[in-house]
Amino acid sequence: MTGSPWSVSASGHLPIPLRHCLEAAVAAPSIHNSQPWRFRLDADGVIDVYVDHSRRLAVVDPRGREALISVGAAVFNLRVAMLAHGRAPMVRLLPAADHPDLAARVIVGPRTRITGTARLLAHAIPLRRTNRRPFDETPLPREVLTDLADAASVEGGTLVQVDPTVRDAVLGLVRTAELRRRNEPAYQAELADWTAQANGRSDGIPPEAYGPWSAMEAVPLRDFGLIQPGRRRAVRTFEIEPTIALLYSAGDSREDWLRAGQALERTLLTATARSVATTLMTQPLEIPELRELIADPRTGWQPQAIIRFGYGPPSPPTPRRPLEEVTEVPAMAPATGARAGAPGADRHHEAMVPPAPAHRP
Ligand SMILES: Cc1cc2nc3c(=O)[nH]c(=O)nc-3n(C[C@H](O)[C@H](O)[C@H](O)COP(=O)(O)O)c2cc1C
Image 1 (spheres, rainbow, N blue to C red):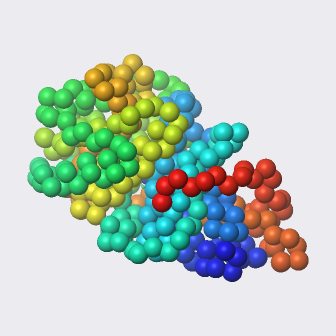
Image 2: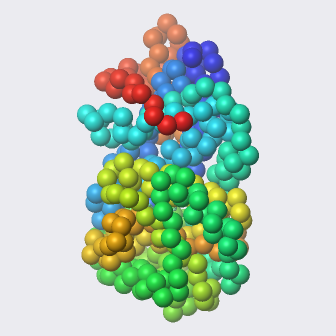
Image 3: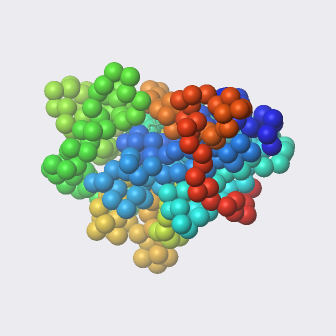
């Protein structure tokens, strides 16, 4: 595919379609905006997506479940962006058993017709936000709830909107988890790392994204201002009847987490396309004995995310690391004019895993 609009140039420059796809990938949500991903590009339209364990949250995510969900969300955006460019992505999850950090291989596949769904989801990628503001009391119409459940199920997830009794129980577990964590020095230190302010910081959560305090913690959002008690936060009344849904996957393997990330992102983008705001509230899923209480004993389904949906005011964007920081381009032979200092320019792709058969367009 050398010379095509999907090939990295000899100087290491990304062609525009490839750049668009990677920009879409990094717009994905990630736990604490940790952006635990890296992309390694091949000259021939192959994008290897790695989980970056140096960015894993050791306290809340010791097994790397939420890191892989985040990477799965980035893979989903990559797929959608490719489709919106008229190319069918071919995706293989965990393609190399001896390279466990290689989360996915995405290959730019054959030309394909651009569908309305691909356009709609691609348009939603830069608009999606985690919105921690009060939502109004307007319930979501039934057809929107159906669309959201369908979005999750297309990607192999199960989205269950919980009735008021179960919802209050789930919110109780979120509150319990949040209060328990707030007293843990290790949790505080980890939160401090991801909320510390620094000029030009391109990861973590900035104060403008924290949202106000929910009066009486009726909607127990994660308190990102925990270690900044000096910061005054307005107290607001949140919606009395929040719409809460649980996203389940059939199993709890690394592949299930990557699939759950794709189901999550498809659900969030579908909500965004329908002007529905979303918030993740995953605190009880980070404490095994609380997570067990949310697992479905009849089916064995494993909870991967707790999502609040509603209609709310706009929420600001959070920063992202520049592509140059997360992307490694192929090493070019000096004769082809490799740019000194370009990522990967000084070393060849060592130990490239053999291409695996793509199993999913
Ligand atoms: C697996 C996962 C878990 C998350 N858990 C929470 C959470 O418990 N509370 C919260 O407010 N945001 C949560 N988020 C949202 C991230 O904080 C958010 O995606 C990140 O800060 C980037 O902001 P954005 O979503 O507005 O782009 C979670 C995101 C992911 C992918």
